[in-house]
Image (cartoon, rainbow, N blue to C red; front, side, top):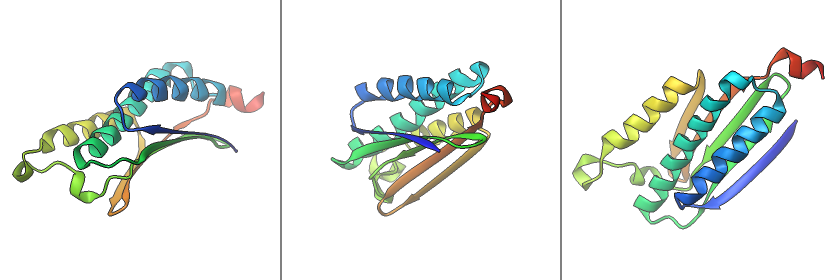
Length: 137
């Protein structure tokens, strides 16, 4: 099980780098070419959400992206250090629809999706199957 881990400061310009690295590692892990755009978009959406939560909450910690090549699945975890109080609420002048829309996009892109959050931050876990051809190599 090979793992690539990225940590980046919560700046929007780093999201593109995370997307590019995720697509390259997914390709190498054996994710089907037809799914790579979904991987790229999903990582971009998850990282943008994490960056937004960090910036909204004034959190200075890093966003972590783990890319894990498992036996039959390619797993991506995007972890933020923003607590529950950084999720936008209309009463706070935030836009809860922005967060809801981002999660809806992820739900549409990724069949195997898990979103959790707690006082210490949130985690988005996504996975895609690895093609049978890649397993034979």
